[in-house]
Image 1: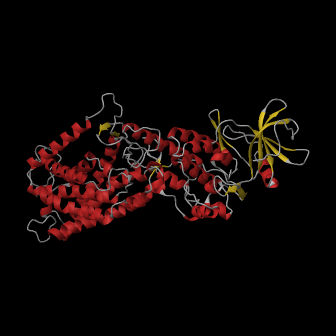
Image 2: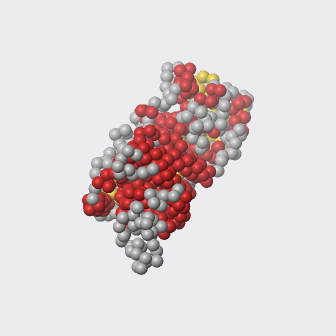
Image 3: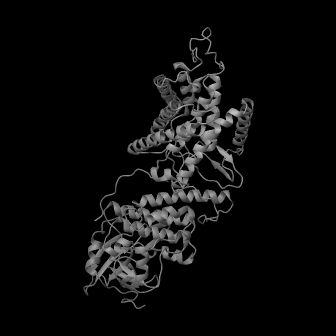
Length: 620
């Protein structure tokens, strides 16, 4: 490689060249010393002088720790143009990648990414696009990462090792829209995504033998997900999106998402004893989504696609309807002593399982933590942070309103379906659960009203971090209103004498004896009074944690154990009040199924961190 000037040359007044550094299609770079002793880098421009000088003039006054400073533009006695820049010692990112062909550690990747992101954010805030981000332009001097080649015209390489050819951008790191002459901050985000992929894996997403082949892959092909570490897949796939409107919108989003995922990956590696500073592989449980966060950060849910979930909808609906049909009949055939014994056994098992906490109170290997900090040992499972119904998150009012409207409509459909199914399947039975059409209409409307009493408050309380007592108070109040509505519905449908509303027993509270209590819940005809409906509805909604079955961040879309426990709770409550046992059990079970089927549900892998931010300025 032959340079135009040798050591101790003084082509530019005031500077003495000490040694050449690099030569390429754009020109030559030398290490020089000013007459005052300042170390600088001198770039002699060979081609595209007008374009390069115009770009440099826009960046002369940019100053940031993560940018290589441009001091001046000078012309020598021969008329050649020189750019006087800050001289940076140390390796480039390209050098580090060459010495680490399998990629860098997470900690070193984070250091490079923080520096690049800091410089890019500064440029984007001032309306400047770099357009040629690549490892060869990223330097590290005394631990400080700096971006070079600011404001200069860009060249494209045939391959990473070959000579330069004329164009804009560098082919392995060039965004698809550059080929169509479109430039904006999104091209830098795409290039940064390519570099991040290379730092994590040691390879660029698209490679080939010729420039045309690589460019075509950028335009048409999708990155191979299997080549990207599982926990970073969604983050990088979004940064490398072909459509710039679907791409990560800000450099800060890419940086913050990487830090969250790398912390999660480091914790999982330590928990499984495989902490080698590398990204976790597919053998590690990385099911938690990009953006998994602790309580207190802002999370928004992508609702309608997430509600559809991974399991076909018809399977979930059929499962819920079969459960509603079978369980009341099974409960009537089982004695209450057996039910109480099973419930007590289940409660003891849950209690002792929750007591398995590490003595120091820290997260032990193979344990998980919910958002309240409860540590539960689960041998054989790596640690991961779980976002639950208690996770605080910011959900826009418009999204809450849309969810409320759609949940109400779905609850109406499922309530009618449950009532129709119970009526049709038991119409020929001697002991029919739903004796007639009027009773089926009552069940459908009452379950729908009760579900609205749960869904509407939950939609507007979700993600706000309210206490359990506050949630129960709200549902108690809505339960009182719904109880009055269901009593009026019985009177309107003339169902006071129906066998469905016949109450057996005197209850445990003494509210059936006129001489012992002023609050009579049962009339002389052994049917519930207005007070009976009010007490049952208020207790049903206030004593059960229904928000856990309606929250978008619940564990599963339809949890059978919650439905079974709800039916048992309804039966016990019917015995205590008293209330018609069959009706109380059917209402509680149907309510649980309708709430879970009608509520939005975001799968864990789609719970994404989306912090609020101010829109960046327009890039010109």
